[in-house]
Amino acid sequence: MENPTLDLIHRHASVRRYKPDPVPAALIETIVAAGQRASTSSNLQTYSVVVLTEAADRQRMAELCGNQKHIAEAPVFLAWIADLARLDRACQLRGYTQDTAYLESFLIAATDAVIAAQNAALAAESLGLGICYIGSIRNRPQEVIQMLGLPRLTFPITGMTVGWPERPAKVKPRLPLKAILHWDRYDPSAYDEALAEYDQAMMATGLYEGRQVPFPGKPPVVENYGWTEHSARRVARAERTDLRAVIEQQGFGLK
Ligand SMILES: Cc1cc2nc3c(=O)[nH]c(=O)nc-3n(C[C@H](O)[C@H](O)[C@H](O)COP(=O)(O)O)c2cc1C
Image 1: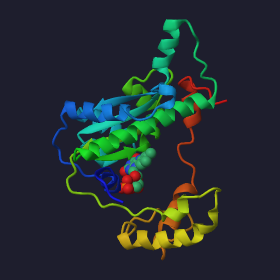
Image 2: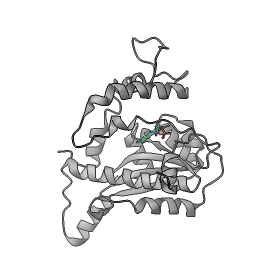
Image 3: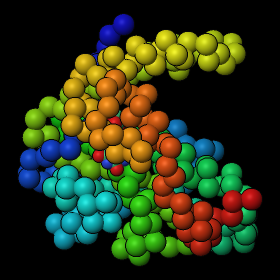
Image 4: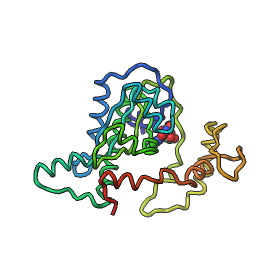
């Protein structure tokens, strides 16, 4: 089945090379307003966006996000923030106390933030812009919080670079649908076949050539390095292990 929306969705590819041309403020507003149109838990709209366009800020953000060059190069960086601070004000204005003791509050805000971010991503792509999510905004969360002036009850969930693609990015194959789509009951029986198929598809892209994730005890280059090996290596090591403390420091209870 085809239509312009499906075509746009299926053309998505993260962009990591941008032209230096600025993105007009009106376009950024259009993109974020499209993000706002996304569904949101109980219409609570528990997220905010901080836009960085100044070169020095983008450079600093790149440093905080693992020195990813494309962050400094992209003309726009959007920080998508889980945000219960505005609701706290609403409670204050009406004489209530927000109960943020439970993990559910944080999940609501985090989910809202990413749903809005993805609507904005598609809006940007519909305008010919490229985007790349930046999860590394959680590498040094305390410093990001300080840099962006984030108050209590806010937390940076993901960053997003936005800009004019230098050239079209290659669309990456995804897992076969049978690996992720379950009818009636969860059924993992298709996994091994799906993973083998997907390894072939990903190896055929050449994306892993010269880009094997190093892993202790493994030779620098192994045969048959596909998505299964790549992803297993990615998740076999813990990362961002201090998040709980920072999230709690920001006033979110995780009971
Ligand atoms: C939450 C999230 C965080 C991500 N963080 C980064 C990042 O820090 N740096 C990066 O280059 N790409 C990042 N990405 C992009 C993914 O690597 C990319 O979406 C994935 O490899 C699939 O490729 P595609 O988007 O081109 O289809 C992130 C994506 C998501 C959804």
